[in-house]
Length: 451
Image 1 (cartoon, helix red, strand yellow):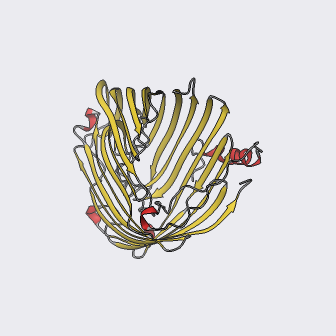
Image 2 (cartoon, rainbow, N blue to C red):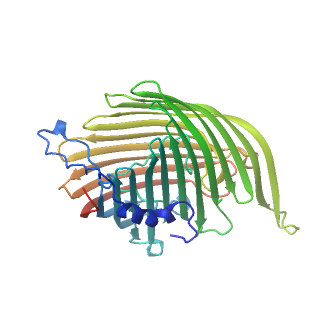
Image 3 (cartoon, one colour):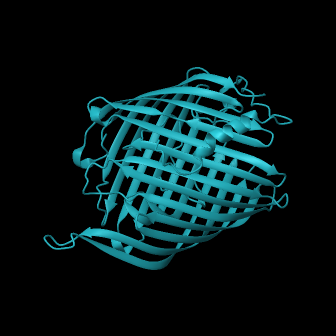
């Protein structure tokens, strides 16, 4: 990964040594392995990419053979290819009485049979930590970074839908063909609980997304830097529900362009005892635009490039909702969200309308079925792009077989479609079908510290 990576990942090793060497008065007990079920109905859902067990270091391997009918992600030069994908997962989670630290690293190699020059090495790193500084005060650190080329291949048994959040991350609903992407996003939270029913969360985030290796040098993608800060106040009105109020500031930079957004919102969340969960937020969004775009000048005249700037302000309405239900054999989540975010490199700030569906169903003692889908539309908020918009629809269906306690097999199909309208200078239209057979193997698990 790049040496210029911003965020909090650089703190990972320091915090790791601090937590491992820390000797608490009482270490938490590790989760015990589930007992063998008496019948299929009592079998709990288990997933290949579950979080690392407490106080353990794990090493997993995965392999996937697939066929992609649009490996370049470009309808204009559609090329199909058989793909071999191999990767690993190295992770640890260390829990103490007043702290928790986890780190997950996932390297991956992707090899194309008939496009050898397109072979790629991808990287993914995720870090999380939380510390109880005082009885009513807690600090949390999060950082996620990745580096990959082209369109990322569907991972084994992982969520593909964007998660609902009042503090949105970089836009994840748009696909990036023909470019290398480096992205990193970090977040710090300071949580203060003045009473058993109320809590304040003061947070700040910083993220970037940089592109390189674009095939056509006459076309360019917008590198993006995002900075967010806000405060959430929540009050528990019952044992299962909370209400709250939030304020969020965003600054999105796209080279010489900078857009700022202010978002107050009301929130509500319900966690039912029957496995039902529901969350809702909404409020106005005030946006200040300051965009500068460069266009080719008239042939044979000077200057060769003309810069056009647009300044303005506008109000938008934003919000989102999530509905979920979980039982011993079923987990289903529906989300919908309307929020201002970055334009994924193709545009500056956009209004992103997205909906997602995730279903995980245990069919029998050893078989699971996974179904997911995302529908999104990102519409430009800058008049410099006219009515430009990017529409995305993706969906996948997978069957997973638990062969043993360490080995999982999976067969899946993923379809994607992307269309662009209006003044977007970069070709993004794409249809893609991806069929895969993969295996996930837990090679080893090493205890860390006391259990």
